[in-house]
Amino acid sequence: MDPMSNKFVGSPKRLGIMGGTFDPLHYGHLVAAEMARHEFSLEKVVFIPTGNAPHKIGRRITAPRDRYEMVKRAIADNVFFEISDLEIERKGYSYTVDTLRQLHGIYPDHELYFITGVDAFREIFTWRDVQSVLSLSHFIGASRPGFAPDEFLLEFERKYPEFIPHIHLFDVPALAISSTDIRSRVKEGKPIRYLLPEPVRIYVEEAGLYVI
Image 1: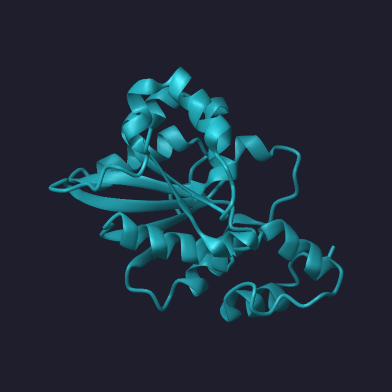
Image 2 (image 1 turned 90 degrees about the vertical axis):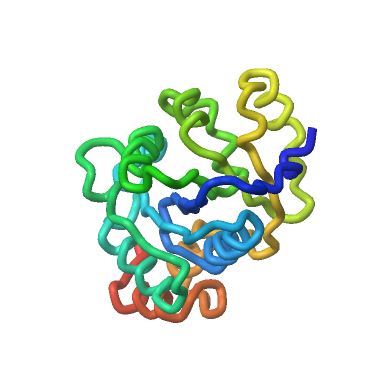
């Protein structure tokens, strides 16, 4: 099984979707999006900050508009990156299946390629209406070098063999950076410069995010 064997020759236009909490967005997210754009010939990548995420109930999450603003500032200098408030404007919980259906309406002539970290992607078995999710989009799982997703792929193939061609994995060295670590460093008064774009670092400081 080689999830990277399909080179997408002659396929329709491809749109990258970078979903995530982005609390805060860091260089790992940006590197993953740019590498995926090049590797999979994506026309552009749309960043969609999560709204009310059902899998993060009970966790403290920064306000949606703050997270949106950090992403907006971080991607301002890349003409191939865009941001959408589709999820943070949606009432109720943000489910990936609803987002993908909405995106198909906005981009009817594109194939969708949802980019996420392999760690997060391993939770796909718990997503709402997972079969519809898998039919609506390809999925690009970005992982740290040395991460072995074999167990996940075997489970996926056992449960959804027809969708194996929709799964694509690749390594992103910068994913060693994590939002969780950045939040902890801010709370502990440690430096975060060079872990995330400077406009994002400045916003975190000016808005007083993560200090408590």
